[in-house]
Length: 85
Image (cartoon, rainbow, N blue to C red; front, top):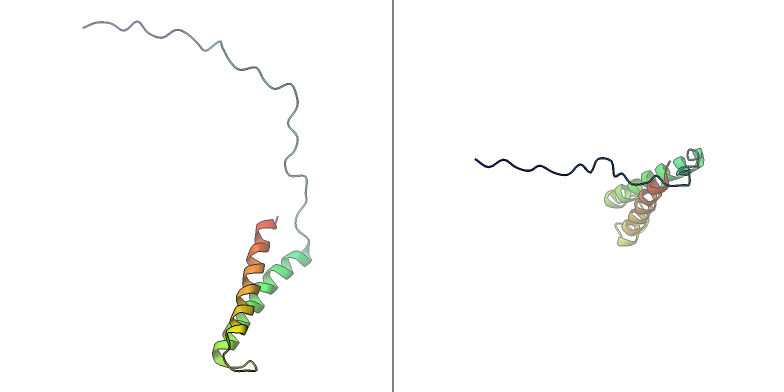
């Protein structure tokens, strides 16, 4: 059976390191407490508005406006989670 020739040694050829030092990516601190309270508050109030709409506790009976308002509250609260640190 034939013997393979092998590969040339390329271990000595490494890329040169960058000349500048990497900077810190996250220089911001944790989220303030009001941000966290607002985020969870919007999601909670949105859920309560949707539940109250289906039970019929809100003025005007079951209306799609209340449903939309609750979904917007949940959506804004969920969108705020993307900036939570």
